Length: 440
Ligand SMILES: NC(=O)c1ccc[n+]([C@@H]2O[C@H](COP(=O)([O-])OP(=O)(O)OC[C@H]3O[C@@H](n4cnc5c(N)ncnc54)[C@H](O)[C@@H]3O)[C@@H](O)[C@H]2O)c1
Image (cartoon, rainbow, N blue to C red):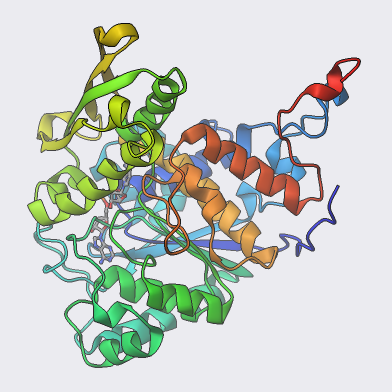
């Protein structure tokens, strides 16, 4: 056993701030409120439902994760955020049409009281969002960041919260690589004052949150905290950061199936993935620049799991294609098809077809909850900077510079559990297993 980490207790109230209060954020908030009132179960949430094995298999110690590590409870959560539309959480949840109207109505009083703060927004970064009307007045990027910091202060005081975390649930911004302004904090702050066009709104939110000591997780594929300037700021302020892009529908499937095929040393020639979805996220992703951010995030996973450099004959020549098609009749009920061309013994070809009829935000909501609770845990445990142990939740996990991200869902899960064991001073589980047999 190692010495347990000193973790401050989760006393008081935890404010969860979501920049972006659309389908994912309102499904998350509604689900927590419903669970609190006993109207529904937080299914899909590891913090609420999973057990963790401790010690040897023979010991039978398998507590719930939430009983093992000191997490804030659902009753301690307070919700807030920003959006470019003025709809309160009730109206936004009704418009998103993820949950049945009756479900939303049942917690309507609480949802109506959650109103978004005005957004820092730019059409240059999100094109397909017409009619936005709930924006901060002009000024430099730095003025915007300061206005966000004031929002955070006000929220903290009005809602009497003891700690805060932020999870970006805003639209996917246009793809752009890091530019010189992102390379260090001094340059970034000069860029904020000088309105550098390479700084996106999500980076302004991230900057404001980190300056206020608020842990920040990024649920979309845009860079946000995945730039050296933000890593530097997180280190200076000793705040945890994590990203990027919630791992929900098709990529969840991909990171379940690909490690299995690779474990059996089956080859892959091609993987064609297409999606149809009709929610606002789908509309935003209909713009090629926003789609490009998503495409990069979705394409990376296979490369990292399959290691074509080590297995060129099995995975060196994969045709990997990802498509997202905006199709309004589907709403939030995304359908994703995968056609996987594989080959086995003597090169004989086979095919796998996956038709996943999912509900995007139903899969994303428990991720927002788990990230909020684990980021708060990380902060109370004195962890700061990139929280790679939370890779489990992301399509494109942020890592230390130069480190290959871990995309295999099962490796990510054991990394997460071992981190929890380590924090609590329990033995890490290696699955060696020799201790159960005589004479070894
Ligand atoms: N649903 C999923 O399964 C899933 C999976 C991975 C990632 N994501 C990402 O999560 C994000 C949210 O998805 P969603 O389905 O809730 O989308 P949505 O369109 O329903 O909600 C996004 C909200 O963000 C707001 N917004 C956009 N820019 C903003 C800004 N600068 N400041 C404040 N608000 C802003 C929009 O007005 C909108 O209400 C998207 O980026 C999406 O790509 C979703």
